[in-house]
Image (cartoon, rainbow, N blue to C red):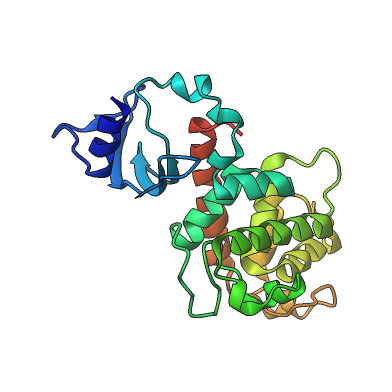
Length: 254
């Protein structure tokens, strides 16, 4: 029976009516993935849209959903998603890293932006140099994801949030640093402190990022990285990634 199901999945021989999850969410199979004849999942790098959210990963086909646990796949490293596996090893939430990958590249590993950022996580060559990774290796998916996780760790260690900082504020400021560079975010936090405001509030930091386009702010002695004109893009980036992260959290456990 499972061989038949493999054939049906590989050739997308599905009913004409809309596919659904067991909870009624619509499912669209964009790419069935590449068949795997070795140990591990049945198909690699499939693309599915579930309830409007794009998922990219590996596929295991069973007659019964309970076979996943019965066969011990939940404990088998061969079934680990690359983003999940690397992110968990580095101490980061794989759902957040997946949300970043979606925004940065739509899970496309071989793209390069006009600014020179590369791969799934859009890593700049300068970031690779910080971690002693040759530039020619940046587009490799595993290396790219590893670099993104290392960059996130560096950002978090540099920002040094006090205990009790609300998680959404913390996450938003970290994402803004990933997008715009930690220097501009630290400038915004210094301006907040200078004016007696909370440097750990995303609402406050976002406002000063916007104000850093004005001379009376970017010419302040508190500012080390000069004028910043990318605040609209950074604020939209933070909102988009957090929105997608929230979607992933609703349908996937950590």
